[in-house]
Length: 489
View 1 (tube, rainbow, N blue to C red):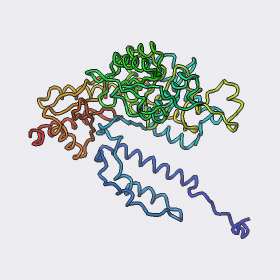
View 2 (cartoon, helix red, strand yellow):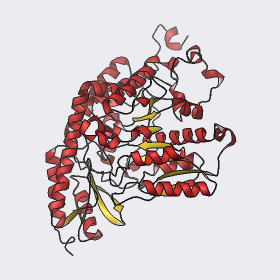
View 3 (cartoon, one colour):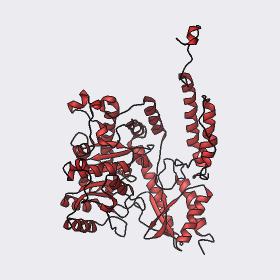
View 4 (cartoon, rainbow, N blue to C red):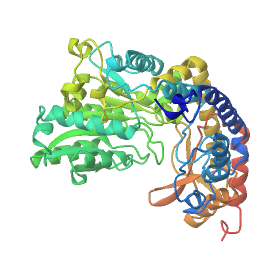
């Protein structure tokens, strides 16, 4: 018995926040988030702080005593907000969309509140079964090959990012080609993987992490539209086979990061099928476009794919992190990743009638990410999501037409969907002046790439609340800086 109890009093609570306080501050925080989302376009899009400035504003040592939550919340405004680059701003045109929505935030809040650890079906059946059902819903919504449905030999799982999906696909491909010996014996120095010279860096990271090594990754040349050349892929595979190496994995891209190029899946698929090579298709950003029937051409040839992924957290109003990863044969993935220690054995898993998603990913633990998908799909409806995609594509196409008509600007790549790549006709210095000028003003944020060794500005149109007026304002800035003194030098 404590001294307080012995004296007839009540023991002091060890909880720093009571249920009543949690409710009060929870309401306050939701109000803060709602206000932020309505005001976000008023902020300079990119943070202006200098390196080390945020840390300098933090106490050097942790607090010994509890601090009141209102002080913590005030420090969000004072310390954290100056260091935020506002990805949710409708004026964020950099990198790729990382859009979000109110129902997604609420789904994430519920996931945090439930605190589910969904490593096994038995650790929370709803976590597993809702995820399986959402991934099957998305097969229907995007009209993906029915071989990706969980009702057959395939199925889908939520990964954190497309980078993790690529690694899982590569490991499954390795185990299939080595009949399971890759996990038992270690790396095979004669295995070779392939992707285009425009593919995302995550593919090289995957071959490194898997122990295959960067020297065993072939970067296949691309055509004038920056898409993988199937004939070049066929030639390099034949060369490797003739040298005694084993081609085992090809990663094709639906919408490359630099230019939104679309690799020709039917032709690449034929090469992979002819050579018995695993085909992984990465549609991280562009995949959600297939919600709209008129854009489903991007997936033509997807029936050849052994695995496929896309990111709802890029362009489907779902907050980060949420990558949807599919395989045609889940047995390939499970055999590559499953390890069953005694402490995870349970009656449900032993029946073979349930899915244990721990076997479909690198980590053991997993969050209840399907909730935010469920909330978003039900709140928007498929038509609402289609309307958002169509709006973004239309705005990007209109911007591309304006650039093409401008006497000093030129498109640097095709604009199949919502990424516009352009440059100044006077060269890299003039292009850099536009990029630096727009970003210095702070009203919008743009990033760059290099295509054919020339500097190119990328305009990614895809934030949830981006409207015509935001693109119009960006265009005014582009025109102003395109005709400035630096541009005409």
